[in-house]
Length: 310
Image (cartoon, rainbow, N blue to C red; front, side, top):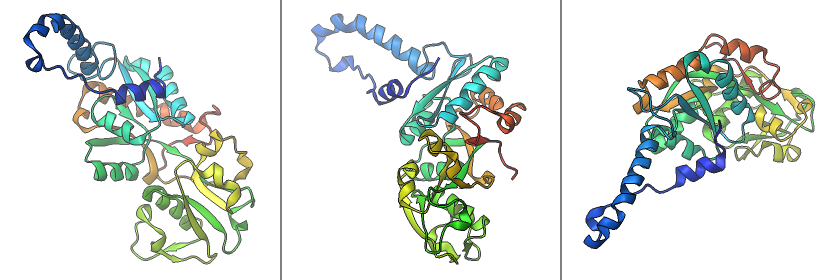
């Protein structure tokens, strides 16, 4: 079973049902009381089953079908959830239902509210940006995979070939800007000022830039569209693969640091929920990381990889 983006967004955006009999005229009460009972029952099913039509497990907000949200345009995240549902979850007596959401804010709020059991679309630095800004109660249970993050170019065949003064496009949110700059620092192309944390670095933290790279900032997901307009783009592999970009244009691909590992994120209020704890064990099952290391599934290979050592 799956829930597509359109259906999910419609459900998440629907107004709550608010029926106040005290405000109705007395002669209307008998006419609507039966309908109220039916609606209330329907609402109770949805609310107490975590957004599922199935009964909840005793002592849990959730049922045996656990909805896990992912970024809608990430086929690799969907493929990972499908693998877990088919090969790991049955041993734990649950069913993972992937839910593709295009709006990260909607995805996180719904997770905090308990409409989804978890989501897998963000590393811990992105999550901190979200919680600092919104106050939503979200907790990362732990790292579950690495997104492959690389340098792409249609003009040059290696990072070394990017010329002096070359234009390099970076994603414009703080966490992914830092990830790209750290990639260049680890490649020996730039250095940071003393004391700078590489996972929060900005261009103002660069101490030396011997190749005089010119940095331009692009929206999340725009990398494939601007590839021919700049010397190189640093972004997630899955975005280029989804756009049909030939992988020969991937010119530098170092291992991703664990600082930017994808997290299993749950609503803090549900952290000790027995079904959520069971979900965490599924993601941490011993067979998961070896699978990511050896998979030949084109929907996962070169897009998601095992969690790097600390």
